[in-house]
Length: 227
Image (cartoon, rainbow, N blue to C red; front, side, top):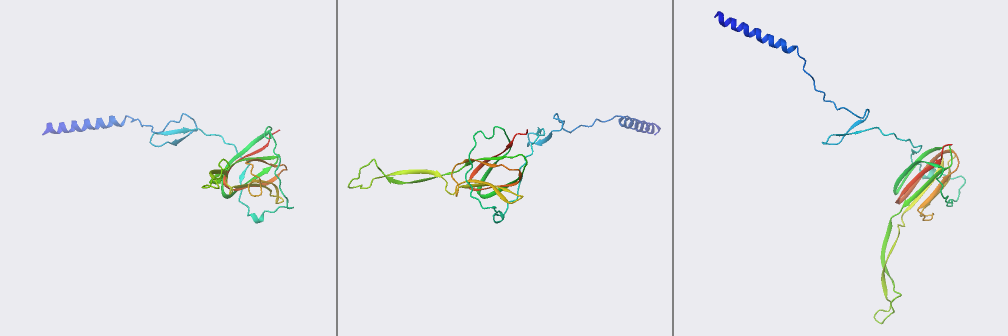
């Protein structure tokens, strides 16, 4: 009996020594965070294949600000003016800076911007992409002589032309005196040139509206280079 007690006591002492020895060791922790070699770059998820690091991209601020559309009945011209197509200036942007450009699809809708013009003139250059319409029909065939069986010989013809329902208009309105400074466009009361220039030659606060249907406008905004 005494021997069994001694064995039990020795066993308990050995277990306590092992436990005390284990408490003295420090278990290393695993760092699961991803090291970022690009400084302040933000990891962007890329699906199951991992992540792609994107560095911040500097952006330039455009002076154009999206504007709330003004109801048409509140836009007045004082005095009422008849606008003629402005003369096109060759090499107009040689000493100018591009401040913004927009691609605007139109399906009988309007969009507008506000601009504080401190260093005139402002040049608005636009190029339109107008869809075409194709029609087939018949016409008199001048290469064939009339016969008894065919007194009026004809031939098939295919005609392609710009969509007659397409139109476009740009209006520059001075918001201080509510006067329309410039207006130009395509179709309706305007000619069908697809590339034009619109000049705003006086400083001020402007509301610039674009409207149209069945076309796309590529528009660029230019001001003089900073002196």
